[in-house]
Amino acid sequence: MITWYDIKLQTLQKMFATNNGSTTIPTDNSTREYISSMPGAANEALQMLATAGKFIIKSVDIANIPMTNLYPNGENIRSVSRGTIDFTVDNAHSLYFELKGSANLVITIGDLEFLNEDITSSSLGYVPYKYLIDNENNEKVTMTLTSDYPFSTKNVAFYEASWPTADEIQPFTENIRYDLSQIVDDFYQIDTKEVIYEGDAEVSRYTATSGFFQEGTKILLLPRTMPGNYKVHYKAYPQPITQDTTDDTVLSLDPEVAALLPLYMASQLYKDDDSGAATVYRNEFEVAFDRLTRSVKSPSSEHFVSESGWI
Image 1: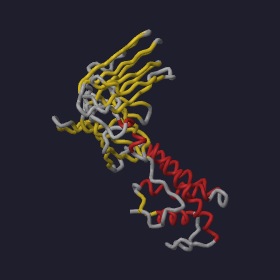
Image 2: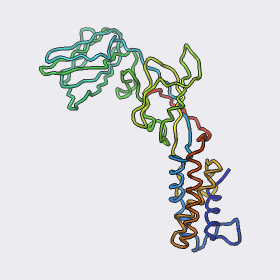
Image 3: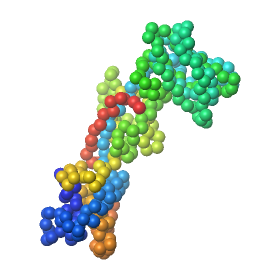
Image 4: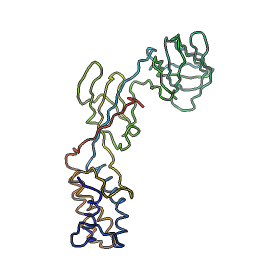
């Protein structure tokens, strides 16, 4: 267990800013400027180590539970040069679809008109729309799109489920997107070798899976056809150090990382006072850093749970 006080003390010892190996940090003018600059130098080293040399591996549980679409083949694209497209289902309480172009949207419940509005997609691609449907009697629901100009739809979904707000309605896509940077605050990268499928209500298992897609470094796409719980391991950013970090704050650092922090910090803080010693410390840091980048990266993990199951 190492504290922020330990790191500061070891850094000052390398800079010969303590008296004869004292374990007490001086608080006079000789060390005040060094101490105030330490958080920035420490964070630089931690960022380097956590993103290249010594990955911090954590995990988050994602409950991939797609809602059943009451409309068959809703993922198919339907297009018209002008005219009408309609969809009818029973017992729907929410609606999701994507539109390219402009159209008049009419939603009817039974024989009564529930909604009538013009919608426009100014984008080159499809734009999603979400609606809550007040269908207390579980009647037939019809959506009609009409336009004198070309338009098309895809990923049309009527759900029996409802949500507290329209924004929370689950998109209907072949793969469900999860932005991990929005789920966990310290997210850096997906560890694609460690996505574990734990099964669903019918099947219990614990096995690494490659049945997913990745967009960039943050977006994970899990297939609609494989519902269940996934344990997704990811590379995390380190715990930041600020001016408000107290001396007794315990830093979650592996010993090899804790040993390198004072080297880097001293090399940065000591440059103006003794460039020779600062260069020696930086060289020692770089040699150790290089060894870490070529070593097996297997730090301990932490665990988080995504309660919502989807974004």
